[in-house]
Length: 187
Image 1 (tube, rainbow, N blue to C red):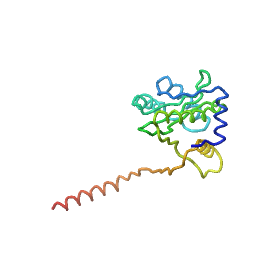
Image 2: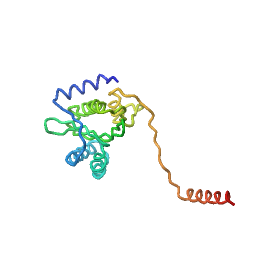
Image 3: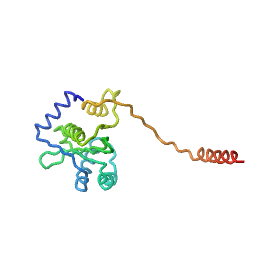
């Protein structure tokens, strides 16, 4: 895997800025810091924040089961960004992320993801899914997100979406038909 020149420059800039990153298991103390960064991120991007309980469940249920790790990026004692990963068997999913405006200026996200990739590999993670990419977007926020994810040298794979469409009337009719057919088969 080869990272792009832009990404290497950002990581080196973060290192020159004395940022450091570490992988930890999320806990209550980290949750409070994370949620504050999450709110900042949502305000900056004009998106609706997740409820605190969503992240509290990660911290209280998923993390103690050994299914979650966080990469914390800091400058001195100030947490700039936190990246959360769902862990299962030898795979990881880049789950959620939050950071301050200062994190963006100091390239904390590039350092955080690069550090996480290296550390996750060391603990036996063979695959890291970084979520949806947007290769056809020519400009804007989604193009920036696409370029960021692509810059770490991964491969694109199809991302399938779906939704459950619940139709109670159709389901009731089908249930009656199945019942009648099963009764007819026994008589």
